[in-house]
Length: 127
Image (cartoon, rainbow, N blue to C red):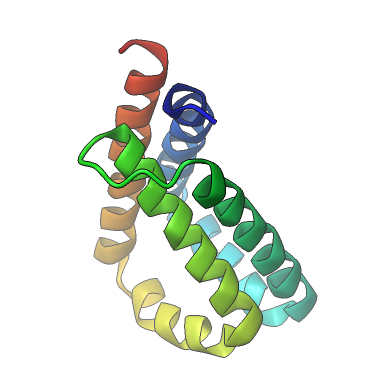
């Protein structure tokens, strides 16, 4: 998998996720709470996130200060998050509770997704 193709896929998704959380933070909070209430959804999501992370890690494990490195960083994050969803989901729920109460932290996270997505989109489509 090339950095360009992964940037073209991940960039727009990250932009949409960041904008979505910024425009509708209540939906984001509700979505996270739904995971806690539906163990099957949490488990299935963990499997999907872990598989997607592994696919990118196996094909694109490039550690450098560029779009390639950012993709690798997000891939490892996905792999680890998926693993935690499968092994210790209550740990993630406990960790998310203070974040859900603090709109500033959620807004910051949404901005990180938005900026990362804009950068990857630019690298994938224009660079």
